Length: 311
Image (tube, rainbow, N blue to C red):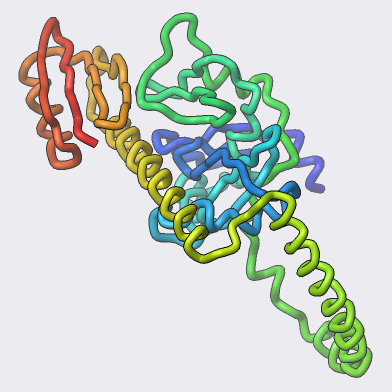
C-alpha cells in the first residue's frame, strides 16, 4: 500500500519561510537552518566509532536540546549532523496540517551534496556548498540563477532519512509479554552466554584501544586531553558565533529592492554591506542590529550601508 502512495508523493524543500501544506503526501528535505553540520578529522576510521565521538565534537556549541547525530564519510574526514528530534517533530506539525502527510524526511546536506553553484531558495536566502558542507546564507545569488525548484526537479533521494522514532514501536502488546514470561529461563540463559561474549569483546576492545593509542600517538594524560578540549571549544565558539551572526542577518526586514551585498569575516569581526533604499531605512536597520552586535563603525554612501562589527 505504501508503494501506491509513494507514486503520488511530492518532494518539497522546507525552510522557515515555507507556507504550510494542508493536503497531499510529501517527502521533506530539511533546509540547513534546521540542523547543525560540521566536517572534522577524527582518530578513528569507522562510522560507528565516529558517531560515538559526535557528542564531544559538538560539546558546548549547540543550543539547549536533546540531540541525535548522523555521520557520513568525506574522504579522510567525517561529516557530522546534529539534530533535535523533538524540535523537528514540532516543526513538521506546524508546516503539515489537516490532510497533509509526511512520507519521509531528509537532510539537504545529503540530497544536494553535488551542488556546485549558488542556488536561490527564496527572496532572502540561498544555498551554497562550502568545502563540502551545504550552508544557507542570507543573500541572493548573482546571475545566472539556479533555484531550489530546479534542484527538486532532478533530485534523487538518498537512503539517509531522518529517523524521528516513535514510542508506539516500543510498546509491548499483552500476547508478546505472555510469551516472554513463559520463556524467561531461556532468556536468562541467553543473557549469561551474552555476558560471557561481552567480557571477551571488552577484553579485545581494550587491546584494540591500546593499539590505537600507540598507532596514532594519541594523548594519554588528562592535561593533554584538556588542552585538546580547550582548542576544540575555542573553535566551537567561533563557529557558533558565525552561525548566529548569519542567522541574525537573515532575519533583517529588508524591502523588495534591498539586499545584503556582501559579508566578510576575519579574526577581528565582520564587515557587512547592505543595499538600502534611504537614509531612514539605514537608521532602522542599524537599530535592529545594535542590540545584537557591537558596531564599531558605519558608513552610508550611494545607498550602501557598510557596517564594521566587532567579534
